[in-house]
Length: 76
Image 1: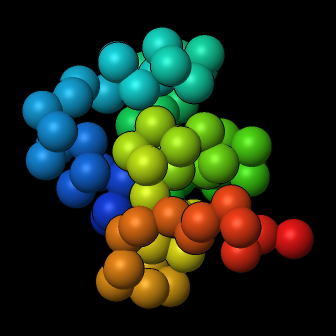
Image 2: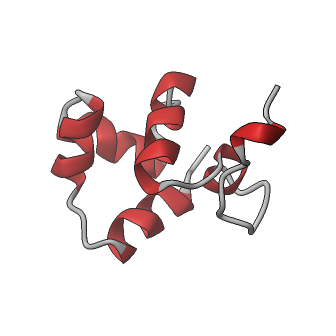
């Protein structure tokens, strides 16, 4: 599965792949594979990416066009 939003968010914030790779503690080539959909992104990494950009997981994976994360009061 290709995650276009991960790439779009990175580029919109003028970040380099190596910056996100370092944040996620993976090689740059692994992060590149994430963006291209060559390998599946572990859920733990998806959560970290969503937290980094302060967006919801649903937005990150294209299930909604609303980027704001859910409020903690709504979480159970």
